[in-house]
Image 1 (cartoon, one colour):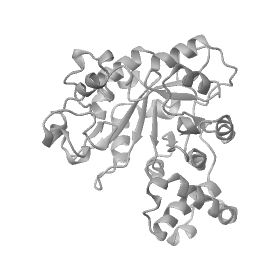
Image 2 (cartoon, rainbow, N blue to C red):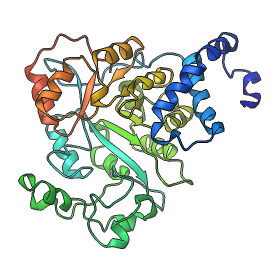
Image 3 (cartoon, rainbow, N blue to C red):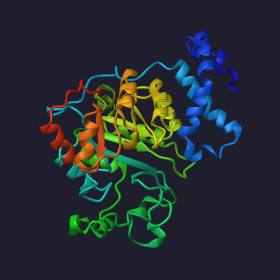
Length: 348
């Protein structure tokens, strides 16, 4: 299955012990892989299931451990409890997600990271939008503003109003200036905030088969002077639900700090990422003290998603997670400024 990689010099420095561990963990890796990819695993052939399971087994058997030792913490204002505030799609509880209004507000509210979901356009530009399709958040000409994001050119997407849906959905938070907001490109985000912000970027499954999204992302990180900050203090974190995307990024540059996201019900399987990731992003319903302790024992940071109520934020912060995703960064910051939790320093 693996061709001549096993005999290639330098493929793995401990092939003997690695192989023994591989046969020991392969059945468990296959079982965890099935849970982890349950949303698509059932449609795979037996051969494709092996393709998924065996790399996971290799990572468990031969991995080098978590990324907690990479670099030092980013500069951050002192809080009573030091955890990482990640603004989920910006301050998306207050303003339309993935717009400059949302990102600006998140930074004003004291978020340490602003999150970008990225997808490629038909003409190869990385844009910041969560859904694969435009129908939920875009308003405008149907030929430009409905259907798959990756089927549209950037010029088409720039005709879409990305703010009006928010005013209609949340009239109590509506603002006239939200009408007509455009979808930003990732390059525009880097141009606007530069090295003065921290970025938490998600690569997503999409319909593009011709563009290497990971390479395009890495090129932009270099172009806008973010590489040094990313490597030295994790100014950029790259996350995905798709292990193959993170492994592609790791192959391009192993210094990129990676976060393995996990769908609800599969967060324990994300612990398999200890050999290639800096941390994991479990669903809120899976975030337990046991999971946090297991992840920390492997050197993995834990950043659950998505917590919004004061009660959720307080109870999950008390588990000594390392940070959280929230639509309301002001609420999370208020908690950390006012509450001294008995937690060890977070993995940063």
